[in-house]
Length: 194
Image 1 (spheres, helix red, strand yellow):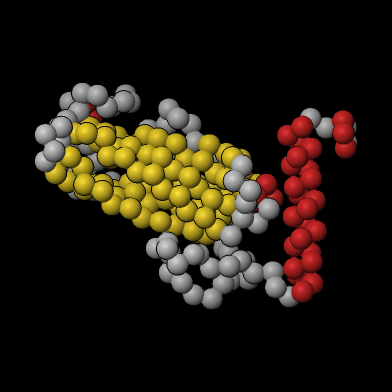
Image 2: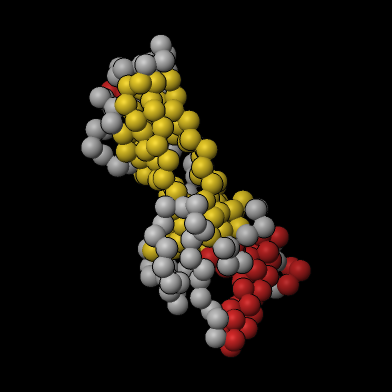
């Protein structure tokens, strides 16, 4: 099958790959096939753009810290989430890693969406995916990998994440549900690479 006979997702991927290949060949011919540095509102260190990022390199990152509170409003500790757009070979992936100063275990849930340069979703994390935060640990939530060609050279991560503890906490880890009751700590983070 080819052209109009391809299923819609395969045809879209084929067109995007062809467009990206043509764009890259034009840029390479002009001598400007480099990736731009991360925008200044991100925590990534700024510096000259590399000719091509190394496998597993971070294209964009943002770190946010929030207070975790009890139902009575007292601060029980802090939760930090780092949302990253990572290049892994010819694919990109969204990752969110968590750290906390909470006295006991908690669970991280939520959704990571990988968006292309037009804002269309190309990958989404499993909404049932959870990560248990034990003191001193750094658990991670991820999206499936998505071919870089699907992003036309640009990509964003849109993250809506929660950290829970106590009887209402989701997941299979009974330690989290028997831990101290905390209101959900909510994070809404977006990070982009152009």
